[in-house]
Image 1 (cartoon, rainbow, N blue to C red):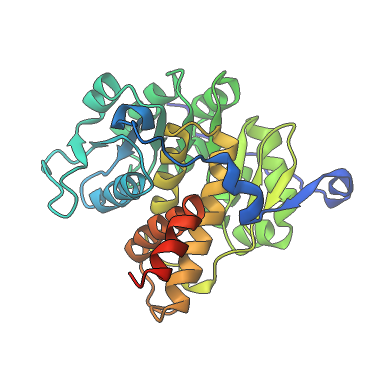
Image 2: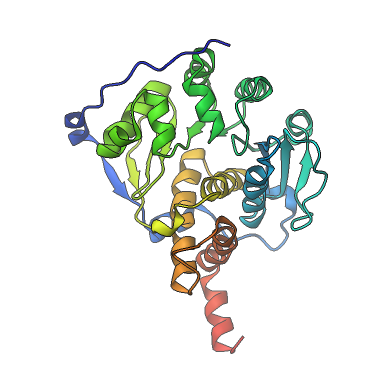
Length: 310
């Protein structure tokens, strides 16, 4: 394991004048995910693998797994570093297993690594193994912290042939760039572009006005969400949501754009209905995301139900 302190990248705004920046709207992204056929079965909606959940942090991986279930993934396997948990009583549909078995039997359409992963030697090894797969890969939380301090892992990200997405908050982005979180926040567009260039993959820079950027694509800016979503577990829920959307056929870029906008819209909806913004929880946003998604996919059904008084 080669530890390093990333050489600080100089972020420069003038180059951003030529960048195409799109503001995400629900109307633009709704057509990306189609209503389900009547003869669908769970195999049509893909498998999601979540790797994380070290002792004391299993809740992060479980939050991601529950979010993936609620957004429609066919099956969700949580490969937990903490092997003391055999069942999630609140979501028995979630399959809890070891990282080894999750990689071996899940055959996931998307793999999300990082929620509650920790930074142990075992975490490093599982992250390296996940990056060697040909699967679409989402990297969050401690997966990002490990990459920021290990040159071999950083190079593995750069050299992946399959779609890869980093989802840092400003602090993690700072570590990936060798900068302070304050510097990242001072020029978020430039910081996001610098991460895309440095790691040669897609990046979601989370925070107010989240930015999504993949190499060769426009920058997407999200305007949903509110300060109450600066709360524990929100990133874990977002990771599970994005993975579930990939499992259902979206590209990793589409899933990132769709998931970020839906995540914020769900937070807005919960706050508008009296739960928040202060004290809003990630679990509440996870539940609300299912409601909002179904309203987007089946607006006629919702309108008919209202007319019938149900």
